[in-house]
Length: 172
Image (cartoon, rainbow, N blue to C red):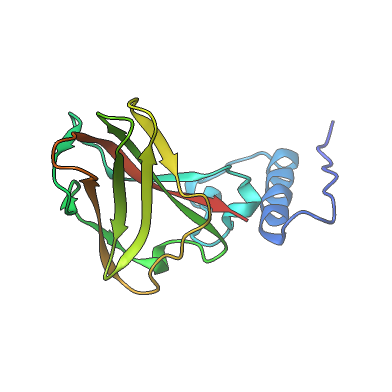
């Protein structure tokens, strides 16, 4: 009778090692495996172990592009309730927004708001709709807060367009 004998490197996280050893035991003692033996619990794996490249959290997904001529910020999303306890503490957050401006000489600005301004993205020099990501990691609020997205044009005679926004989490 053949047996499964896994070679687990010492660098593997303890939670993953536990799961792999359990799988080895099941494979070598297959009888009746019940659903409760397959359960994983929250916190068994931290995001870096899974090596998921990044997580995307949509903040605004309008069916049609949101269009504005306002030079003052106007809301272009709904409310997203941010609860920092629900997300890992280890990693970097970025803000991404899809935006365009009708005249390449002008600027469209999109910002992420909470209790105060979190991040501003701007775009000028092209009229194409393009996704812009914050160039450096942003600091997310440390307490429960409502997040929303706002947009403005640099001129009341130039149309600014908004195609969507999301938060991006990159695990360490």
